[in-house]
Length: 461
DNA sequence: ATCGGCTCGCGCAA
DNA sequence: TGCGCGAAGCCGAT
Image (cartoon, rainbow, N blue to C red; front, side, top):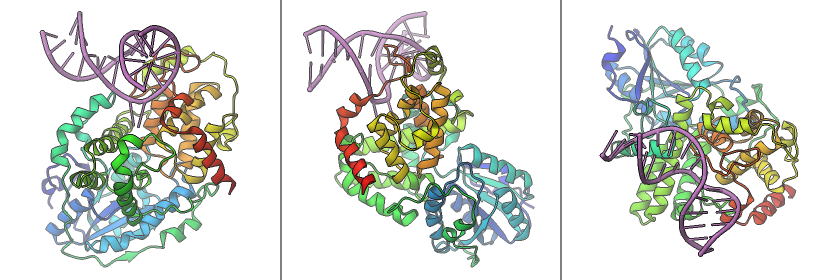
């Protein structure tokens, strides 16, 4: 039997997680985990090309697991709406679909043995839970496992070290963009798979032991179709003035695509190509440049942080200068201390902060500039910076539809401890040299009172 | 209204 | 080894 390494495409996106000879299987399994979409998916392409060569069908599998840390009804509902579209979307490429409830390390090896599969192809995830799943599945499989990276524009293999700041990663990413910012092919399976198996994912949530205290967001729909509609709306209305308005929390000028990107319902490449297309159609270059810096530089810096720093969601993940300066001020008096529950209930003395927390709790989203203000204020109202960091992660992951995401962990590390940032003297009480961000910074960008009034109005109605 | 200075550490030039 | 410069700030001088 042929070794898997010999028939895979030579690509920095492809990693063999379990080497070996191809099994005498009847299908290639495509284990869908992070890239929950049927198009613009390099993992699906590798699976289809491999299967076509072996004259086998491709079957996509998704494991709906109840055990994901801090799994909420809100996030799972959004994800499940996306999963509902997948059997149809995959069938247009001749790919089958199986949805199973259970842990990947049980479901995937059992399915691979039962089918039987010649090999398993999956996507990549920079976060700890996804990496652990892949390790455990690889250990239990008896056929090869191949991971294909499809949720970054520039493959992470080109960035083997932890990057210091946007200015260090930007030129490295830029060098690769001419080669990476091109449409991906959409090969169709020549041996179609007709299998459609598994419960309706939204209905299946009823049975899962997830956190029901955080309900789905009213009026927000998950899935590739809703994501595409939002992308088109953003390109038409938000993108042309993005460079002027992205820090204005009272204008809906940001893309709000992060939940769709988080669950892989959209590909960042597809979004970037749409922005470049808009530039050819007359959208100002400065606007597109500012947007692509968020989508590519900042997003892939966050992914690099999570992939290369084992403490990405912990206090130890802050840079040493940040930890040291916070340490020096750990005994500075704090005017008031709140508990996690008081924060979660938006019950502080700060109306602006409470408005942020309220929007987060009801809409599962917050404009970027307010995420920073929100996180930085926690330093003043907790006993230690470790506690501030832990509370930020806890509330981020509980309430945001795009929680448990590399972007969130990087943004918290930036806000609280200056990761990817620099010191800002003079040294101030509590925060030391960490860049301050008070109401003044917000007022420079938008009408803060109008923002608070709008959130309080929505909460009252 | 705009501007420099404030600190730290990286990346590059020399 | 030196030098320029930076995720979204703040303060005070002009």
